[in-house]
Length: 227
Image (cartoon, rainbow, N blue to C red):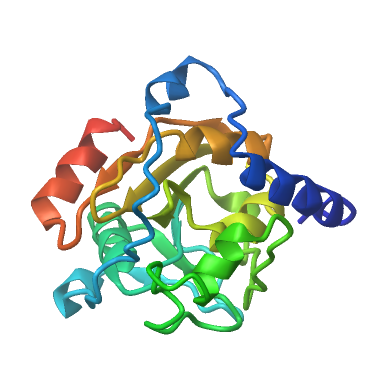
């Protein structure tokens, strides 16, 4: 846990997101820098994970549970699509899962990007936006060697709901692998940006999934990482 940095780093992060800054983190992320689209969030089509995807998934309680694996899958999901991919990754690897939860959940009306007065539209246009989380630091985070970070794409960038999770955790010595879901936008430079905001960890190139990604699709990508 970082005791004195979060406030100043969070302030920096807000400005960096607003400016859409890209901070390179080495050759392993060079291929991520595709142009962003503004057609998001189209926040993930409402969909819940198949119950079978949850078998063998060790889910961390936001209150007390500790690590049962060396791999953590941390994710925010607005409507269920990112959750579905996260649980498939965790099931395939026997990894722990940590859900990044906003204190105030997002409703369907909040996610209406066609309404300029919706919550996400107002947050997108606010350079000092901040979303409070139920818990930003997973129990026993130091013990994880590999961390998957999942999020939906909103307006061509990683959903800002994960900001506190990124800035309030120390990724030193960890392999970090971003993944995202979207209606059409690629992962683009979102992994590069998150790596810059984190400032620590070895961030690999990530992957984008469509709604309803199959177990086979997710497993093939995970296996290609050679973990």
